[in-house]
Length: 455
Ligand code: ADP
Ligand code: MG
Image (tube, rainbow, N blue to C red; front, side, top):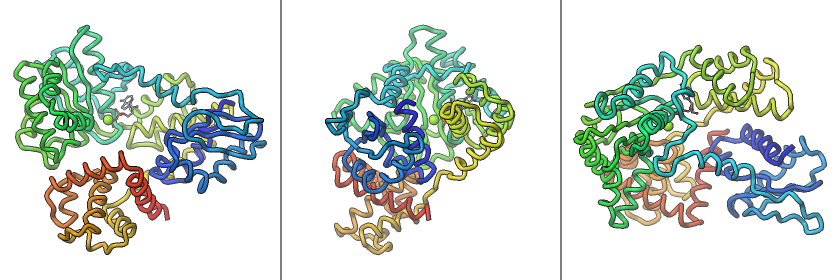
């Protein structure tokens, strides 16, 4: 059994035992880097996680590992990748963790200029009544770049295949037309790029990069809600490309008119082309998707089992795939195919730990508890330092954890202007990235938020 298989099993158990946020916080970027007959060394991304795993989760981790390797007595946690086994028992298996290798491999599939990932193709996309229109629109766009549907605006809920279709479209353009200037970018990344370029005084340079394109694909455009500078630049770029008959494609989790704080001029541009929606797939489509994915992964799973997965997971194709992966992983681990009864049991535990949703109220309460200030003070117009900081943190967390728009957040915190919220968000985000104390503060508040959901 490889270290990765062992660690995957531990991760599987921890994932079931913890809320998703907690799980991600403590187990992201961890792996087993080496082991000998009685000790396993786990690499962790930083000292904070190390401490936390040692103090809070060590027992659970050991118990979990012993199910596979009963002789293990000790687990050590180390930052970085060099094994720190006791010298007399120095292990031979020092290598780059499988996960990192995997990441390198999957990144290698992403073209660094176009940002397109070869994994997403039309061939690997199952067409059903839920996505038929969007699929046809994308194909029409590939054949008539900039001519028929410009812009093309796709929208639909989380995990329903928007990114897949957009990427497939980009890949097909490149495939059919040879060297075309195609670029795919998420609006989050675009926003970051814009903020950077403003800071570095090279906005024009950045803009001209996008103006040279034949096809510009922007994913998750709803994320530009409330971001004026980003909207300005997208508007200019749009006009420039559109006037030269260059193709523009957007995706969003909602239709243009439902994106809050979107400038009217942009909204009308989005609505000026073709709008196609993707909805949740029906049973037949879900089953067809599972069959295709199983085949891609080299698994010939029983149709009855695929049918069961298709019946249980209905709303989100990413989760559908997740459930399939889980069954495949367990099959591989035990080196046999689980029968229907076992799969039912496995998925029941998996699906009964749904994504724990937080609420704005809970976030505000956790922030006020953490800083020891009355909840009311967060919404007051006070400029006292003891209150300003917690309020900014609350704004940041509301944005990160509930994806509320900036204006909505301003409203919740005593009717503040969205630019104040953006400023606070930016400030805390930066602090979180650069200041270890701030980062820990945020982690601890999140702990509070998700702990109170768990119980
Ligand atoms: P979105 O961008 O809408 O959140 P994604 O495009 O990331 O969703 O899709 C989530 C996962 O589901 C991806 O792995 C994708 O390949 C897969 N998927 C979605 N729709 C389909 C489909 N119709 N056929 C095959 N795979 C699909
Ligand atoms: Mg997406």
